[in-house]
Length: 387
Image (cartoon, rainbow, N blue to C red; front, side, top):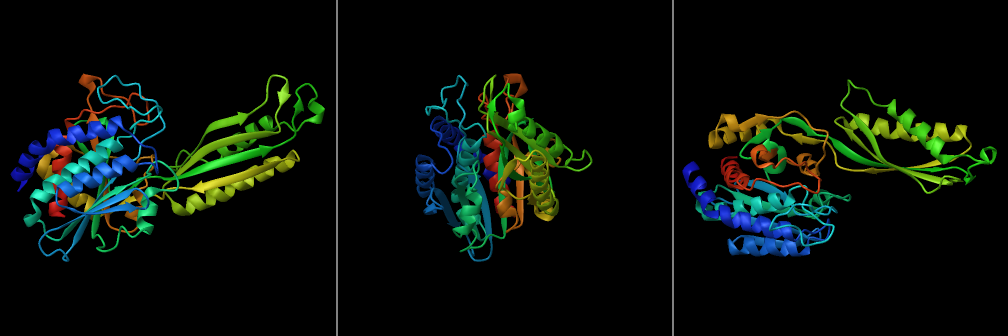
């Protein structure tokens, strides 16, 4: 069976690359994946797979029934949305959509899962149970596409026994895969602070409650909430006061992110952030509006499912190409699935230092070594068949 899957990977590799390039050239933002979802549905139907469309707006679900379809169900997931980034790569499949780019590799995730559907559809008579292919919208934006898909019933009829997903990693060389059992990726919350003071002429400081200075004090106080010994990130990337050299604004807006691996600590930090903002602003007879958008939960890889998947990867591509990864402060909405179904989310190496393919995720020059797709479609098919 391993040899058959590798042969089918060879057979479909160029088609998968073609699909990846087409998707890459036509990226769509979160909740706008209309053409991408149409392409996905067409490809699944071409494989003879039962298709459900418009799941949670733009989601697509494929159902492939093998032998004894009610005996078990394995789910495989890919995300389809792109990012609001202007692409700077000089490649044939460069984005045609101004200011939109697949800078996080979701074009790879989608084309990879389509390749897996091609392989598994040919092996339909060898499949025990049912395979569910989940193509979801909006991984990059709150509200989460994964959460919406779950609410729409994607984990029912049939309910998966296990679910698998992958994410590209440019820091890993193409052809390698990384696994981590347990808490793998952090929760993610968006923090918005609106500091409201009293602005005016910058020279008349006795009349002001300068929100810029108050905001600075708040940020320094919030810094004390993190401890180098505890894996928590509270980081701010935006502070905006629309004043000038001689104008102090009334309002300053601050935006940042909170990342945790502990749900109890996460709740506690929400309260502490609000408390510090209130304490500092009260001192200056001003005010701070605190808005915390609760994002993705901690992504928890089931230890047993992940260990089994890692072993299957070693069998399929050899021990040297299978890596142990540490937990990451990055976040992923695949986390929602991991709280519902035993799951494994692993990393696909797409970098190539010799070819200069090293740019990070969410950058305008992010690119991949497409040879990684040949191994990735084969390995996910192998895992699905043997899980």
